[in-house]
Image (cartoon, rainbow, N blue to C red; front, side):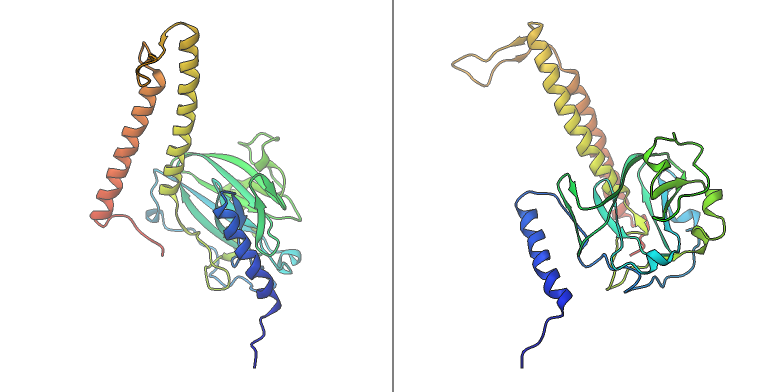
Length: 288
């Protein structure tokens, strides 16, 4: 007797294989296969909203709350949209839910994509891009991000320019006072992680942010170095390598970009040293 494979699984299996093949080929695949189930199939069942304790996060960082208000449209949803921070997937936000992330200060890119059987895009192409915005977060501050595809908040955030992506559209930054109104974040339930809809939220992603910031800064400085070398060549302050010794030559003056790169690498090495010390001493806290 043959075991019949459910239709959904028969579709997801080849899609998952395709995603793996694309990743191996070097393409950036945006997908939430196995994580995108919507409220129609899996309503949120976590506890009612409550702020996390102040001593549960480091005030040198920032806290982002994401919430989605209740609507019949969202309740009937088969697949829930994905939320990315700095191009990394963390959760799919279902109807009438909230969650949070502790992030490193600086510019954090927030992206939302709507999946189709878990697949969302390839490289710069997105099947359905809901939001793509940059939020500059400051140490010790708490931010509230509201998602609703049917209605916008009645009040704009006073700190945002009207043309800011987070001041318009389905995902908007709102003030604490607005978020704490009835029928807003206070009426939502925690977006718990389970087998049907796993997620990687409700935790600190500071180290991931710091590593990514280092990598981005290093790339920018390497590009800056190339431009600086070209400028020195034009100014005649660059010696070409001899034909008999190809490893010689170079700028006749110290490069400013090299000084910045050296400083960046020393700061990053110090950051990793502090991480190791904290891990060895058993410091920090973990949700999972």
